[in-house]
Image (cartoon, rainbow, N blue to C red; front, side, top):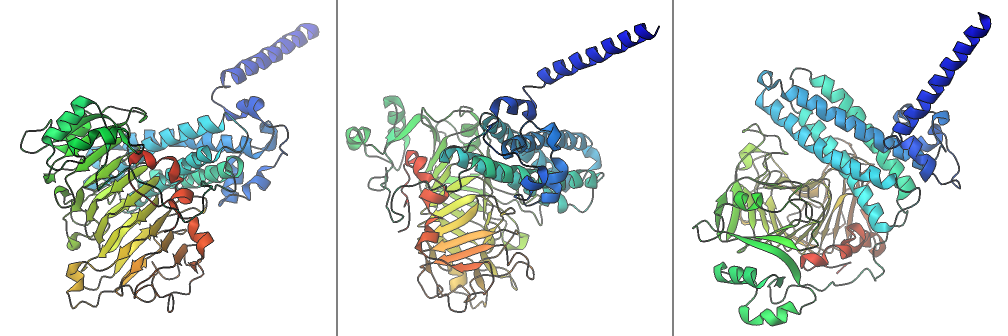
Length: 586
């Protein structure tokens, strides 16, 4: 009996061992720990969770989340980084499932609660894409990545944090709904988790020196524009359509042969015309967007939507699958896209109050006015919300009051644009550069002040910020000709690590000598990065500026870090748009 018992016990243990082996093999494609057996770098010294977590903004949470050393193959930053990103992906899937469960009970929810939850679902869906892309990349190597790949990773992980924070902000604005804390509390943990993922990926895969340009910081990049026109490379049929219907031709017919030989030419795959009189392909912008191809990589060129002069009263949203769209209008105040949704009165979230919203990568807009006419009394009312990576607005105008232009996330460039507003009218957490733009503070409500920027960086590892370069800051006519004592400031810190830089701008005397205004008490005054470099004009004097620890008067070397070539690595992607830009400083 004893021998038979031990034999059975041995066989049982053997079967359990075999089952574990089979289970491990089946998990190999999904679990980062097993993948590190193939991907790990044997020359990297092992680290404990305690040691590695010191490099993150949340060391206590990081240590509680990471596996113990005996459960990880080689115990280095790459193993921990993969684990963290994988966990971020899993929790985001769970979060979407929870949101969908609450939305199915929508009859018990208020309209503001439904809209906030819908925002969260939309943003979490984007995060799934960004995390999947990130995990695929980090799972393939245990080495520092080339600059462009590393910048892509840091940008995506920065956007994931921004999306999560936007969802959190929207839910916190809703005073109550059934199960509110059941969503909010895990979401706060997810924010810390995504922060840890960003910190570990930055430590392991991102080079410390990400200089994107070998050139001197003071450079001028040539433009594809000639005589104010954008040379477009398109088929004979598309060009014939474009030339026949366009009232304001972007290129004269007699110059076509020269244009086709131009090195800076912009490649166009197809073109549709929007004209309200019925002479084009469509009478609304949304109809044209709907038939644009999905998920193109841009190698065949832009899908061009030409919008003739007119006032288009419609809310336009360009989805993530609508990549590499180019919209060209007949000019500022000629082609106008308008709406009037607001947060304070109409019950929209700030995020979904926008007249025009875009998340499709590679978007370009030229010669269009975007506006939100809700007025100052309705407070937050967005004209454009931009969450499109590698997006560009050229010769466009943005009109609103509070929260006019929401530079939400990812990499963005604005050139020769006019931006009008009052409170926080350029805000968000993208990596955004404004060049040669006109910035017009307007007359706000009584007892309000103007803040041009409210940058929303929440984490020290995010590669985000607002850079305003070679622009003009002066009052709009309603403020200029009023007797108002309105105070105007360059910005205020919306979030803890807010980052904004003004370089080589003309700043009119309308700007308060302090330059900057606090958000609330001493919040973020030690952690922000606000900087000025070589501005001119009566409002540019640094005498009398705030004396916060986070405010800096910088030199040329520091200013160069916020230029197109360094901050956006724009020399890699802006030339294809045809839009003119300075690669470095002016």
